[in-house]
Image 1 (cartoon, rainbow, N blue to C red):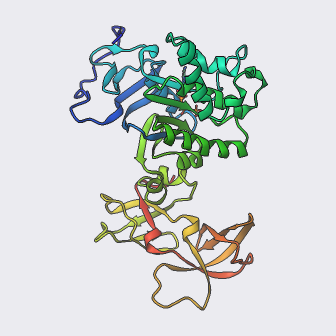
Image 2 (tube, rainbow, N blue to C red):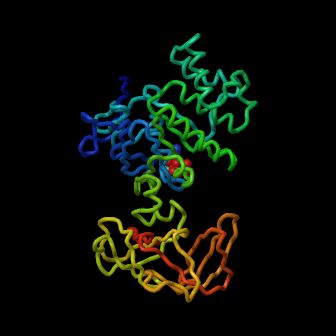
Image 3 (cartoon, rainbow, N blue to C red):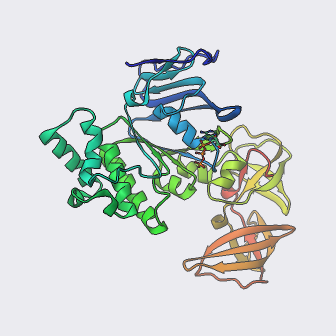
Length: 389
Ligand SMILES: Nc1ncnc2c1ncn2[C@@H]1O[C@H](COP(=O)(O)OP(=O)(O)OP(=O)(O)O)[C@@H](O)[C@H]1O
């Protein structure tokens, strides 16, 4: 293994070393990673593992440290603390003063800008990483052909790179990344320069390619829909730290933190008070408009100020006067606004001094000003850690 000594300023973390042990199946393991630009701490104690064949996404707002973390994995940035292990090889360790150069890590990268070479053909672009490793002749032809086949560009091998659409250029970049069979594919907002329709089409293609190849992908995006549709697991990031890691469904339906609840799904979170700790997975939360029975309570939440999340599609609008007796979480409300978008209608309803977003199928319509009852099923009333700002 080629090892580049770290400069004398790189310090040991003092934490227990996180080297891979016997039976460790993670393809990538990052432990307590920190990266600074001058005085700015861009990556602040980031740790996670990614299994072989997993599609793992770092999601967060602009400037939260996603790209810096990805570039540390690639060896394009020098952290100052922590460890990175790729396929059981220690490629970075502050404690052991190890920094394996980018070209000696078993990775390939796809950038937002595609970074394909305009003076080369499609074939030339995809062949480049193999030629750099000494692959020639029939093997080169067949491996480039297979990569182009995978991304649907086999018929365009001879076309000059500038004579391609944005989506086709992105496919070339993807083919170039997969052609060398690197252990780990790193993708930094690869779809963000494409128009909306093509982005959605490429999402599906990317996921299919990943599944077919069984590739391990680390993906960076600030687009929560993209992250949810592509990923096996998502790390939600904020201010250089990981807030929460989970499967898309879990982060959407059972987020732990106010930040995740708001960022994933773009829902409002209301302040609430828990007078007592949950018992048997149930708790009564005091929201601004009344007491809400919640059964969606993450473990470890205690009494005090928290956030209450009810996704708009989980709130039912019922006519006043015909609400079944004994139905929990019924609140009189008035429709404030409505926005028709074809299959769905987005409402805002005033409940006490609060305004709640409600989304229904357009098969049921309510007029602005209509007096209604909002029903919030307890299983969809989620208490999250932290207080909305
Ligand atoms: N080369 C650099 N020099 C100085 N500061 C940098 C450099 N690169 C990134 N930063 C800063 O580090 C922080 C994290 O940047 P990073 O690019 O990792 O965030 P990001 O989450 O990927 O953002 P985006 O989605 O906008 O790309 C930001 O505040 C950014 O301004």
